[in-house]
Length: 303
Image (tube, rainbow, N blue to C red; front, side, top):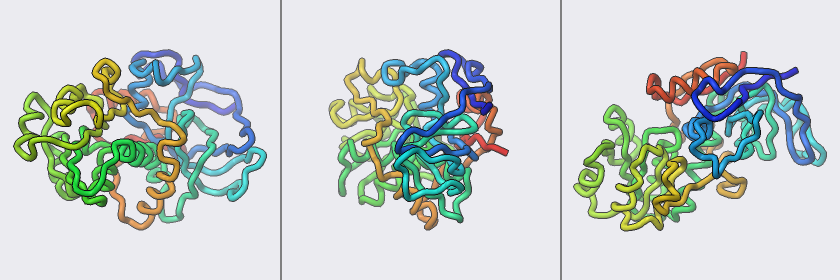
């Protein structure tokens, strides 16, 4: 029987347990992949804690993981353009990446020059970055504030927004100032003076992407002059504050992974530094991220 990191209940990282699960059979239009690597993101942590119950109502044997890369193992009826043995990366809106096998309804062929770990670190972040930039309607000449500018989503969103000739202000830890400047953003630190520090640069921003969920939505609303163009990916106070919580859906950015993989293969897309852990250690990955012991993108890697 295959195994996976199963979310046995909402709570601390220990609720993720490596155990046997039923074998997945791909339905029509889907593939099954043998997972070689799976990305771990901040939304995974929020789901595990139960912060996003209203958006993600999970079954008792749920397997987290929005992104994975691996080798195609089986095809459902009607699948074409891919064959058993092909190396692919997939964004998984239905979750499931933290296991030995995962099902996917959309996938991208992994270029030979991109490793499984790199490929697994891309899908959820690039989908969220492209999706939220589209929902915010960012255009040339506008000013975008990104909360969590040095995170996995923020780094990609910064590069894409700069490429659209938008002005990007990125809130992040002071240690990431150099990186953000290299990417074309103006960095500012988090904290009580966030509004003041942003206003030293500009009196008002056109839109805010909250890729961190660290409680800065009131400041974001103040800086944007309202909540209309403020979107968060994971802040549980979103509804209370009238802010849109953007959830992963198949139609949010359907071409994002294809486009991101092409940029990655060409060497023109920079991603967050990665740290690898064994596939069965999802609980440890969550603990490391939640405790602040690592600031890298964590990827679970199979032998």
